[in-house]
Structure formats: structure tokens, C-alpha cells
Image 1 (spheres, rainbow, N blue to C red):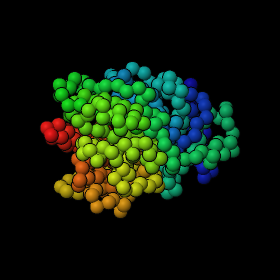
Image 2: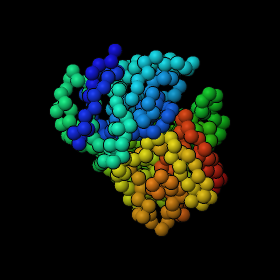
Image 3: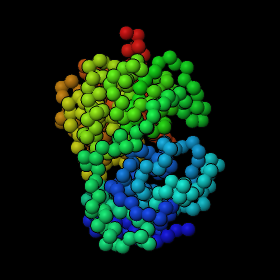
Image 4: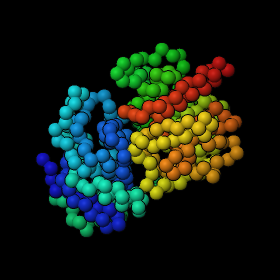
Length: 373
């Protein structure tokens, strides 16, 4: 049953609505996501750690929750904000309702919110710290104070928080076949908050994936004799991840093929000498046009990031490969002196768009060529 709930922003803005899931108090950076589908994949994306997601699509919960589409084993978002919560889903793949999933995961949601007004506020003022809570546990004044007291994501290293505690091997392809890879190539994937569909596509396109903790040393990776290195997506600020940046610099010197996505893209750029910055409200959605600067081809992409690489800070040995057609921000880089490239968006996007999955083919070719040497 729904319960009275509150959403308070650091600027003093207050929204009241119906609470679902766990009756609790949570704080985080509030962002808006413009995707029309894939709410299950979104809330289980580790990149949303310490964030509260506002869905601009008015109906959330319609297709329920199924057993196959989670991008990780849990909900990482601190909470979700919805215009209209669907309590009775209708979909042949659904195994439980969104509310049941929220209760199971001990996550709070608030519904009945004017998400158009909230999104306009965030576009104007930028992502803000916020508090989402049950009104049975907090007052309006206390909720605003908690939002204001949250430290924010700038300077916060969350990659090592969400990373797997134990290494594991992945060899399963994409839904619905889940084919086992027959390739004799193997890569090491640094888990900074890796999504399941990334692992599936790496397995399908390249080979066996050895997933390691974010802080795994350079020497430990070399013992695995990888044909390539993958740098995953993840939450938080890339600059505090010194352990990762240090290792990536060493891999660049060895000319081992490297492919980075999202946070992995930012870490690769930092290792190459570039700089990153906090965006006003980031990119969160599945309708972002990105242009390949070489071919001039335009791709519609999925995005989820609040930090970006500064285009003007790229050293001479790194060239920009893709840019956003929304705001001109950098979306991809390639090294001129090493087999390394990265992409800011999510080419593995599930449910989509999927047209820029060609980057996985590019990585496969790079790994195959390196394996011959």
C-alpha cells in the first residue's frame, strides 16, 4: 500500500506524493532520465549509485519486473521519482511487480510527482542534492536539511564501492540465446560498476571475460595474460580513482588493446593526460544523437553520466572520435600511439538503441590483431 512521502531538494523545493517500496529516508543527487522503456535496466545500473532517478516518461511499472533484464544483482539508485506508478503490470515476461521489487530491494519510490515541473527545475538549476523519504519518519524542514547536508558526487569515488568483491569469469552471450563463446581470445574487464549486457556483448564479440575488482593491481592482471583490457562504466567522480588511472597508464605503455565505456572512457582519458569536469545535469536517456567525427555518421545512443572529458584538454596523441549533437560535449576518443579507444555513452544499451554496438566489433578486431603479434 502507498504511504505519504516527500521529495526535498537542496534549494528548498518540496514535492509531496505517494510512497512505494521501503518506508525509509534516503539522500542522493537527483537527475532526470528521458528513456521511454527499460526502467528495470536503469534502476539496476550500478552507475546510479547515490543518485535519485526522476523518470520523465509518465508511466513506470507497466511491464513489471522479469528475471532476465537486471543489469546487476540489485537496485543501486537511492530512490526513484515517478509521475504515475503502475501497480498492476501487463507483460508476458513479468514475474513480479515493480513495487514487489522495490520492497524486496528495500528501495523507496515516490509517485504522483509533477515530473515535468521537476525536470524543468533540474534543467534550469542543474542536478541537485535531494532527500526522498516517508513522511512518517521526517519533517519537511528535516528533509531539506538532509538534502543540503549531502556531500554530492564531486570528489566521491564510488567505483570501488560497487565493484565485485571476488573475480569471476563470464562466457554467456546476449538474450534470448545466451550463446557460449567459442573464441580462444580472453579479455580482462575491470569492474567499476559493470552492466550485465556489457559482459554479454563482450562474450559474443570477443571471447571469455575475466571480471576483476576495480582495485586489482597491474601485476595481477598480467598474470592472466589478457588479449585485451576493458574498462567498465561506473558511478561517481573519475578523478579520485587514482588506483585505476595508475594501472591504465601502465597498460598503455605495453600497447595492450583497451576499450572503455562511460566511467572507463573518463579514466582512460585521465590516464592519457586529459581532464574531466562535472556537468550541469548530465546525460541520462536513450535518445541522444552522437556523431562520428570521421564518417560524419549520426547514432542515436543511450547515455548515463554526470561527468565528462574536457575536449580542450586532450593532448596531441589523443584525438576526439565522437561528439554529442545535443551540447557538443566529447563522446569518444582514440589514441594515436596506442591501441586504445573509448566511448562516453552506452553502446551495449539494453533495450536500446543498439546501432553503435559496432564499437564491440572494433574492439574484437583490435584484440585479434594484437593476439597475432
